[in-house]
Image 1: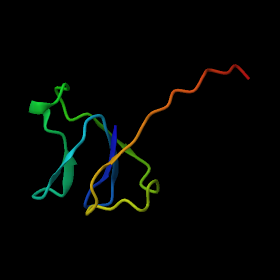
Image 2: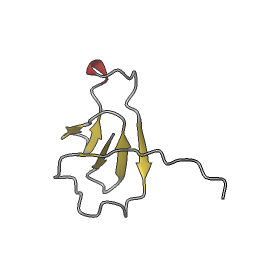
Image 3: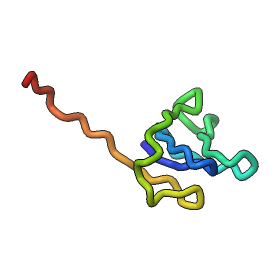
Length: 71
């Protein structure tokens, strides 16, 4: 998964590595070269990853599934 920040400071989590759209000011996924049919992304809290800006390349992140605890 990948994290990228749009030009308007919104922070997004993508399934595939996004590419920068210079004309629109946001990141998008090339769905022709993806296993996914749509640009699958989720807007996340913009306070996360404050060091990441529009000028930066997306950051690859890892989702870790923790063992279920009934406590």
